Length: 368
Image (cartoon, rainbow, N blue to C red; front, side):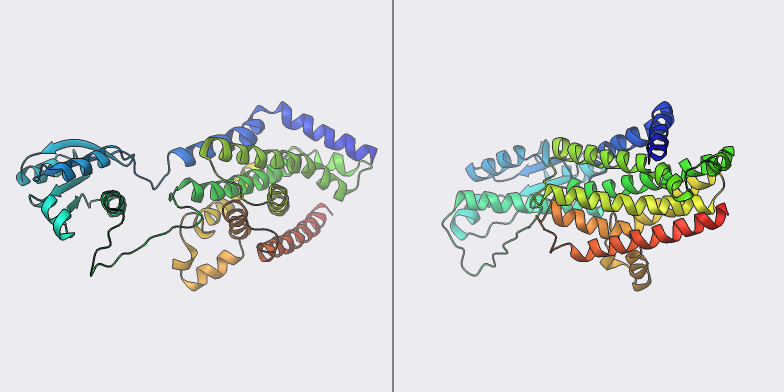
């Protein structure tokens, strides 16, 4: 065991001496989590808005003030004629126009049936739909503030409620996916590169003639990356909570244990890749293409699995990332415990054992 620990310590020294390795291990995850959290978002803030107030009464002014105070809209201009709406859209100055009719106060106060026209730029349908939803929600809030105790006759009240993410923050969707992607790539890629480097430099033969057994050599190569990947997971969690306000409603210990389990699966994949490749470049390419693309497209990270064809859903079940994302969302957003994530946890344990067994067996065959 003394030789083993000395071997592990040598691997740590080797990692800390290599600046590029440290950048990949710690720099890339931090940059990715910040970029995905800040740059890639479905939310729309401060969309430029034009308002045509044909009523100019107390209620219309109150409505305009409410829109001005919204974080989603920026009242860009107050127009005075319907003919100014189209040119404003054509010039690309606004994303939405709200037209308040001349009889707004009368119909709103006496008839409880006021109509406000929402006009959006639908060149981007997603943004247009989002802005319509924001505006509709603000109008409903405005109505409730003006007449909190009134119940309109012959009116359908559609009560909307969002659970687990009532503010519809996109960062709550991206953080589990990005965390999965980072841990998968860093753990698998770095492990495969570390082992293939020995083969490429010809130092693997030197290790094989040493008193350390091949299994211990592989374990010794992997242990530093287990520790560093786990530290990576903790850093990502701290960034998610402190910068993006991502909640951890469930058990933190269970969450860290699941992270450790997923890191084991990723490391097993890294060993498997290293056993079938002979150069660092090939190992990196296989890791990037073979793991990043499926994790991005078929894990439910970006696109919903429910909308995919059945063959792709079957393939998705073979990806560890799909099960880990389910675990992360359940623990972090829903406050789920082990009884809620037993199925994906069992699948990951099974994958880890299977991949580790195949990897070590194939690696031994290659070495012999």
